[in-house]
Image 1 (cartoon, rainbow, N blue to C red):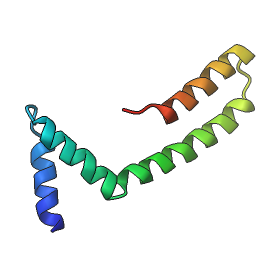
Image 2: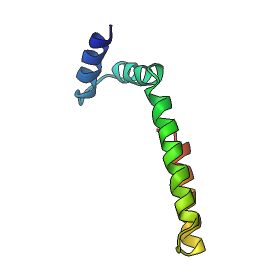
Image 3: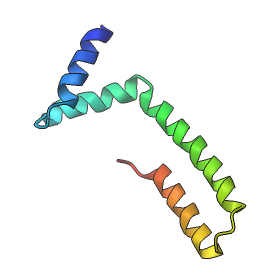
Image 4: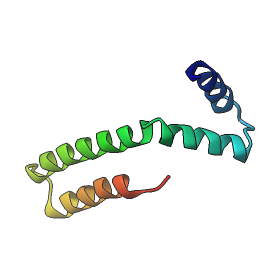
Length: 79
């Protein structure tokens, strides 16, 4: 039931002392619900948009390369 999952999520998310098992449950919920994929796709679209703007900017080549690399890093990081 979604309302029970939401309650459990809220309880775990607001608990500074949540167990590893509880944290794993939240991670699984985020993955299984499609929220993770949605966020990854949204981030990819926004990074691609930002990279287009950067390529047409007046920043120095070094600055452009740094920012382009940083954008790519943000997409590939695991945590």
